[in-house]
Length: 114
Image 1: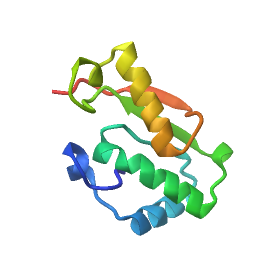
Image 2: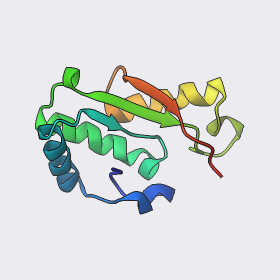
Image 3: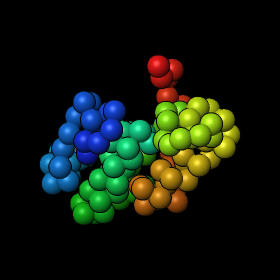
Image 4: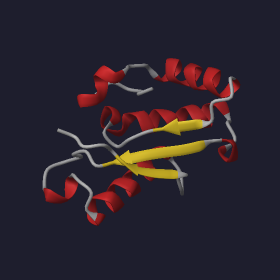
């Protein structure tokens, strides 16, 4: 699920904060514990919504597996896209900030983006 609705990934799905929180609650109650985000999903807004939903619902962090991805363009310049160490580290730091976390459980590179 993609939360928010800005940028290239807005066509994947759009929910406002209340609907996103309700969907997360339903998923968690049904046994879903892997939550995947990416820096390009709604220009990072999906991770901000996730942070708010987890906090609002009081979900225990130790019961969640949080994943994020990088590769896509997050700005202008050669170090704002791709799989260079510089881009991956900056993207990870930005994702952690948006997620309101000190760590994640899984970090992935996105498939080839055209």
